[in-house]
Length: 167
Image (cartoon, rainbow, N blue to C red; front, side):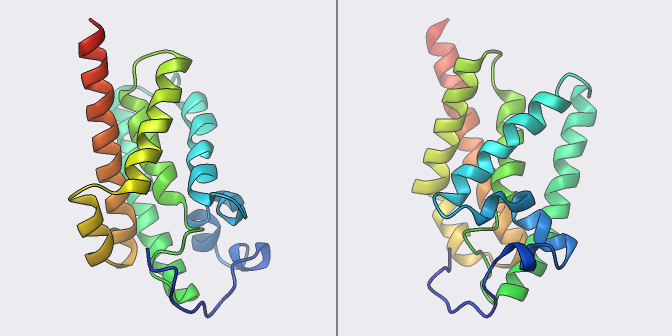
């Protein structure tokens, strides 16, 4: 993240409501949280998943994730330029999208979903290789979105190994 860079625009409700890309990138406002905006943004994925998972078949759900990833590339790229910070901490669409992917592969049950949340946040915050490399070197909307997809992959792998170990 390049949050140490000077902000040209201070994120606010006025800012995020000034353009659809900003509203999306800031996760419908969840990214304005003064405490742990990435975690708050990740939590937004839960009600989205719970409302859509039973209504969409697997192909449609994965298609939706691909679509909102593409929307995120656009929204985060445009919002990062408007803010003067490529990956502002309040832009949480990447967390929402990636965690929807994690939830798709999470075994049934609230306990598994809680574990999925903890694993995803861990990998998104710690950024083990190669996540940290891509976070530092790939910029723009795609770079913002991509490192969280990698964190999702680590979380899914962790869930899979735990499920295998419990069988």
